Amino acid sequence: MGTAAVGRPGYLTLGRDLDLPAERTVEALRTRTHTLLDAAYAAGVRYFDTARSYGRAEEFLGEWLASRPGNVADVTIGSKWGYTYTADWRTSGVPVHEVKEHSTAVFDRQVEETRTLLGRRPDVYLVHSVTPDSPALTDPALHTRLAGLAAEGVRVGLSTSGPAQAATVRAALEVEADGRPLFAAVQSTWNVLEPSAGPALAEAHAAGLLVVVKEGMANGRLADRNATGPDTAALRALAAATGASCDAVALAAAAARPWADVVLSGAATTGQLASNLIAAGLGLTSAQLAGLAPMAEPAEAYWRTRAALPWA
Image (tube, rainbow, N blue to C red; front, side, top):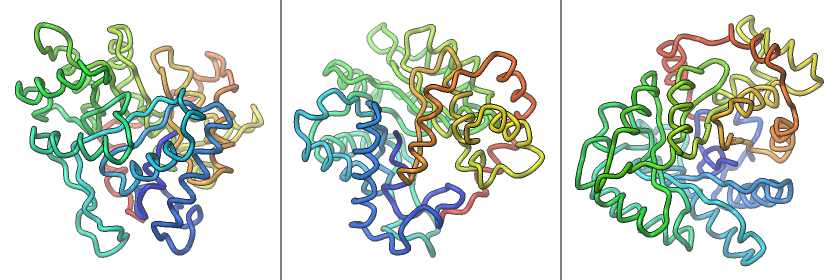
C-alpha cells in the first residue's frame, strides 16, 4: 500500500474530490491514513510505501507503527528521499508542490528526518524519481553515503519516472560502490498504458533487485469511473468478463509480470482498497493479458498526459 494519495491534501489522482473529506485537515488525513493502514494490514498487506515529499505521510505511518508495537512487527517499510514537499498543506495557489534535488546535503537531512518520523530506519530507502541525468547515478560521494546506509541493513535503491525509465533502470544496474552493485531495489511506473519499462525491470529482477510497481492504475485513469473512453475498452471488457472492477484487473495485469515483486495500491478509501486487493487472487490468463497489450501508449505521450493532470 502506498501513502501518496492520503499523506497530503493535493495529489495527481483523478477524482480525489470524491474520495477525501471536504475539509482535508491534517487530523482528517491522519485518521484516514490510519484507517487504511489498519484495513490493509488486516487484509494481509505487509509492504507500506511512503516518501519525504508525501506531505505528512511518514509522520502518519510512524504514528501507526508506534501505536501498534509488536502487532505489526512483520511489515516492510519503504520510503524515498530526494524531493522536498513545498505546498505547505495547500492544494491551490501552489506553483510547485515538491522540489527535487539528489544531493548529499538533501540525503543527509532527509534520511535523519525519515528515521525520526518513522521511529525506525526504513527497510527500503529509494532515491526519489531518478531520471538518466540525475546525479544519483554518477555522484561518488552520494554513492558512498548510500553504501553506508546499505551496510546498516537498509536496501537502498531508486524510483524512476518519465519516458526514459528503462534507460534509468539499466544505468542503475551499472552503478557500483566498493566494487559491488549499489542499488538493490527499484520502484517504477508500469501499467497497461505505460509498459515501456517492463524489459528493463525484468533485467533488474534477474539481477536480484527488489522490483516495486507504482502507478498501476495510471493515477486513476484506469479506475472504473474514469476508464470510459475507447482507449480503455479492452480493460472494461475484461473487467466485465471476470466480474472484477477495472482497477482490480489493471493491478492484476501488473502483478502477473514475473518480475514484479510488489505492486502498490494507491487507495484513498477502504472501498478502493478492498477492490484493489481483489487483484491478488485474479489470475489472468496469457490470452487475457495479451488482449490488454493494444492499450499501451507511446511513453512520451503517456508522460505528457500525466504531467498535465491537476494537483487536486
